[in-house]
Amino acid sequence: MYMALMSGGQLLQKKRMIKRKLWFGKQAEEEQEEVKLPNSNPEVDDLENRPMPCQVTICPEGCAATYFPEKISVLKDKLRQVLNDNYGNFNDDLRAEFIEESRNVFIYNGDVVRSIKGVNRANLRKLAMVLVFVMGVYFALKLAKR
Image (cartoon, rainbow, N blue to C red):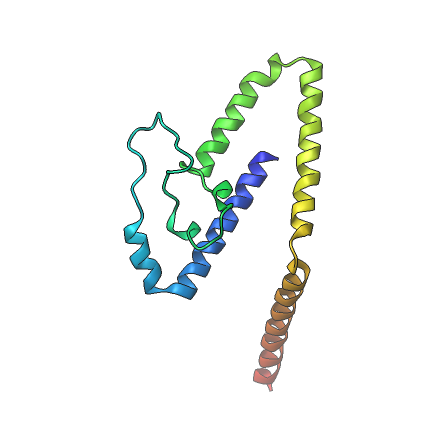
């Protein structure tokens, strides 16, 4: 479940990056050049002072949850490896706690998605645009055959 949340964070970051490029254009490129380089000391994980990617700077505070200093795929592989290596050593109680936590993460993630206002409206708008496009192509092909 945590890997799914990380993937959702990746999607949000990519959407913000695209939105930033569409809205800000050259201003975004100039700001990208001003982004600080990461801390050269890998032992220090300074959550407050670590640089954020340029695409995250357009969002309000709280977007740091979707930023990871290394690639998400690397982080997922590490998490998967740790769980695979250690899961056999867990007792039944700890395994039950893992399953319960996974259920709770799934439920809370659904609650978060449902709490975002306008999601249904945005999805319906996208669906309507796709339907109009498909119908337009269909009628264009129909007219072209005449």
